[in-house]
Length: 401
Image (cartoon, rainbow, N blue to C red; front, side):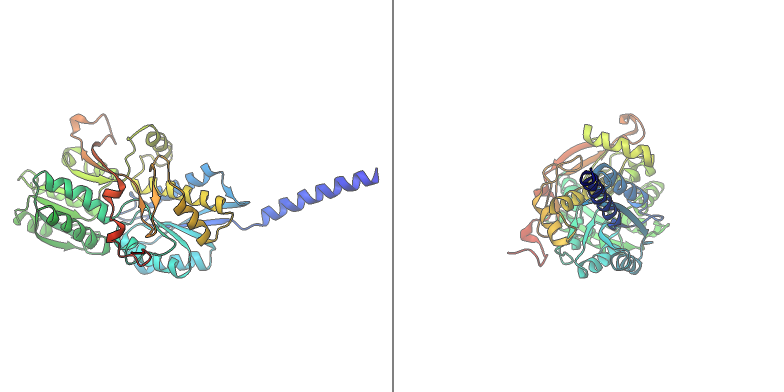
């Protein structure tokens, strides 16, 4: 009897010790560097944090015996602050992976910090092609869209339809400059002409002087190489100037469903835009978007849907690798195709670009919409290998040629 009791006590002690050991394991922390309060807050912001938390919950809340913790910080659209946040997250808070990093200048800054520390950073909200070109790294992933794909999908369709003279309104920072450059290349290669451009400050409230220059150019298309609140304000103010009624087309080179909702279909109808995701594509997108909308009170943007998808992909790779070591996890991430509501057959290339289909949409007329958020009609699906920059064109030093 004593021997039996001793075996029972030993087994109970071992189980208790194992439980204590599991509880003693530090949490696996992932950190979002977001615009929580300014012109990109609707695109990413609190919605991106929510998407990351949903991914963690759906995954089960823990991996390798460690609870998963989601952090988020506001970079206030300042590159130096973004770098400081990344440094603090990785050096002091024990963050293993950084997600989203809305806006390109802030993403480039945070990316350099992550690269120096050999940590994984996944970009969902920023668009600059530099993130998978000159600024690429072995543990960097550009997941949702980039300036090359946006320009390629939207600009090509516009020029082919006869809209062959362009003038650009460009946000004066990395993203806007890259978007103008990439779209200009598409326009000229397709036989169109760029008549000029003007650069505006980030988050400006008055577009009047810039719009008047665009109007005076007589270009068939005014390309908006900006995003978020800047895109919304530029389109609203162009309507006040009667630019579209005067025969010129506006082409928002990066717009989200939240932007179209802010503008309203009466003003936005007929706009052509490229997107990586739309909530009403199929049963899978609608199912996720319904869950997201219950929390955020609106459908997800492509950036926010990409956060959920990429965080899930990362956590699956951690589990499969059996470690949080960046090299081991990234190897699994690049070897494993992405098949979910966001992407089918998605693949992360050696330059960190995640290749997936892109979509060309036209904004519906008010008479075509069944209600709020029913904003797009699909014109074309562009395969990822056609939408994104080819490896042959890549300027990423990791790409072997």
